[in-house]
Image (cartoon, one colour):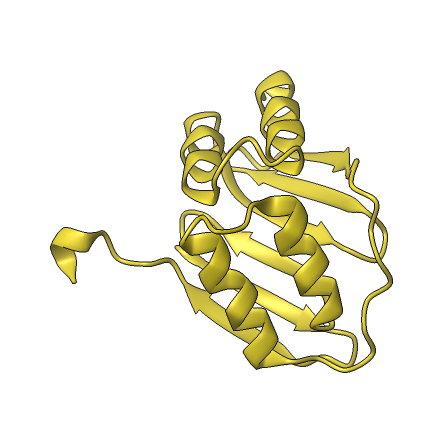
Length: 133
């Protein structure tokens, strides 16, 4: 398990230095299959292909998670991140304001599931490469 590479991706992402596709590529290279982000506890847990796990604390100042989940505001934050008009710090701010308490990014499954405080969810498939659209 390359915990140093995972740590670097965690920090660079939270500092807004890396896009989601860049983070996905680097994490897959070191055997990460998925990761869960707990926005209430401020922690990311990485799940590896070999069955191992690795947790990293978040360094971002996290706002309280809104009580009500807004799928439309969650999607708006996702689209802005996909367009690279916002980076991870702003994405997290918008997500907590939209009521996202956590999300699970399935890198090998190419989808992310966002969760609200009352069990609501939104499933987002990874965008298809432009040549396949």
